[in-house]
Image (tube, rainbow, N blue to C red):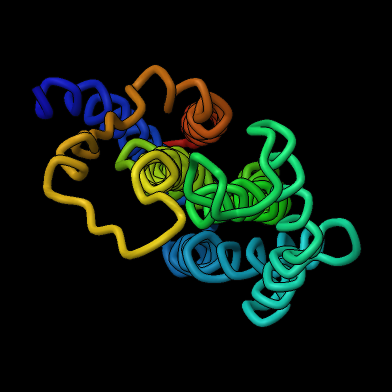
Length: 267
């Protein structure tokens, strides 16, 4: 089943590399036909290879980071901690008091010991939901920055086909940023489900006095993590621009080669 799902990806990846190969074949033929000497052709082709393979990827990364700068790990972690800590009505103490008041009103009691549900379980789940909002907001902002950087790379593919083939290669191999986000969100949803099951069991069964230890039956309620990677159509939809640019580069290279050949005199 995995191999069957991978075949369309392999087919599109093969097409991408054939187009990339065509760029260099057509370009080599064009330069060789136009150049006044073999030395000039070699220098021109070497210059294109250096720009395409060495200069352009580095320049694209620097330009993307300057247009969409990412926070440092320290800045991102500090912002997360501040968000989790909260302030004012959003602080941990304020949220705990608010939760306590809501539970007292719901169950018509006036003390934690009188609650029919475990208060620690409710507090833990409330903390989880607060943390989820903080993490969702922070990572949405960070992933937005990465997405803008990726857009810059795609635009700059107009100047270097290596950027287009890199994007297509990573995507059809399942190693690009959108597929990382797809997996990360699935894994995070699974983690949140586990926490919800644990906290709900604690609320329902632990009471508010003594120690509570759950058995294996609790963990059997948690299904195994099953992840399905996006299909080739999902990836292709996001890589049409890269494939289109490779096709454009390939057509331009062979067009130049044909034009050069038509003007070349053979003695």
